[in-house]
Amino acid sequence: MTTTPSEQGVQAQGVSLGMPQLPAPDYPDDVRARLEADAREVIARYPDSRSALLPLLHLVQSEEGHVTRTGMQFCADMLDLTTAEVTAVATFYTMYRRKPSGDYQVGVCTNTLCAVMGGDAIFEALQDHLGVGNGETTDDGKVTLEHIECNAACDFAPVVMVNWEFFDNQTVQTAKRLVDDLRAGAQVEPTRGAPMCTFKETARVLAGFPDERPGAVEAGGSAGPASLTGLRLAKGETTPARVVHPRASGGPQDQPPAEHLSSHDAPQRTSASDPAHPAGPVSEEGE
Ligand code: FES
Image (cartoon, rainbow, N blue to C red; front, side, top):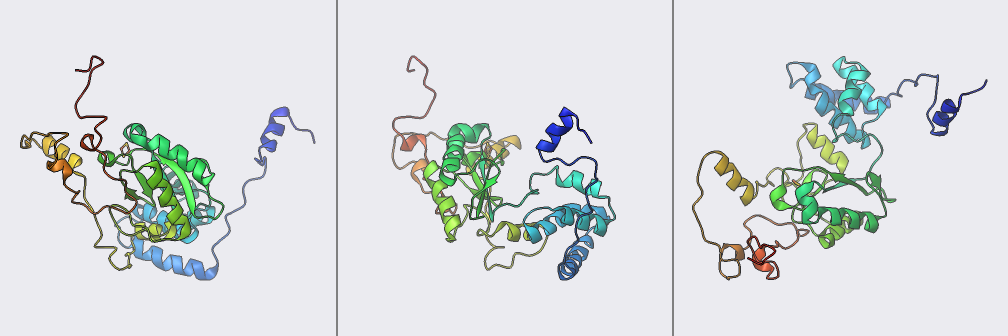
């Protein structure tokens, strides 16, 4: 049989032609029984079973670390959907991983604000430090690095997320230390939210099962002061006028932040702490 040049090109890229893909293999009996019991518990929370698809995708992701064809077939079976319908959802949302990945999904925000505040530099430094590119995993299977879009935490820019937990105000140094600690198995706490756990454990919580680690539920956080000021302004409230003396000591900028800071947070850099860059716009003429 002869093949056309275009077919040869496709085959060279490892794409099979002609034969349809074989059905996904099923889970082992014990795994399937356990997942079915969990899935039924999730499905019972919704008036329409298909509404449980998102948590069920997290559930199968908690089993294998990513959404496999077996997992999608399982979701389709449990919800009486087609695998095409499940695939359409699983491939739309970036929280569902499609290939084996690390215990810790380290996402560096490289959207505009974080990028100019240092996110681009952090992402480049982590690529060099870990020896992986975007979407790739370290050899020890611990860290998958990716660049991500805005996490709605711009007032803490530049932001890094690990398994969806926030690490605020990062620098190249703190981000390197963060991934080193994750790879070494050290205790790592995010700036806000529950203590770190693995991606699989996180996926199970996202599927709707309780986080039973001590203190995990109580741990929390709030939006930052800049976000809350914006919210008050948007609601039509006025904020009290205040005078800020950037280089004076004893002002509000000298007070320690009220929120818990992670040991991986960088010191808060403000214009007051950086005399080389005083606050306020400076024109080319120096006004
Ligand atoms: S730009 Fe990074 S959190 Fe918004």
